[in-house]
Length: 105
Image (cartoon, rainbow, N blue to C red):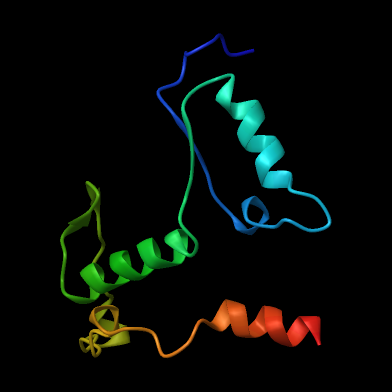
């Protein structure tokens, strides 16, 4: 068992942290974690955004990402072409909100 304040912080992620119905699981987990360390909830889509940033850096030829070496693309797969930089453009719509709205119908 962890002792009080043996952690620097806890970051809660995932879709369940944002659900309010049928119960607020995120609120319960958050309150329990506060006893262990300062607790934060990640922004919606933060994991997807982070993965997209890593993919962008790799596509642009980064040798490492967050200190982790990035391997070269095997020659048999050909040379990857840089894609249009969609991260610098606003999203056309929120696909998760659209999917949730359709599921409610």
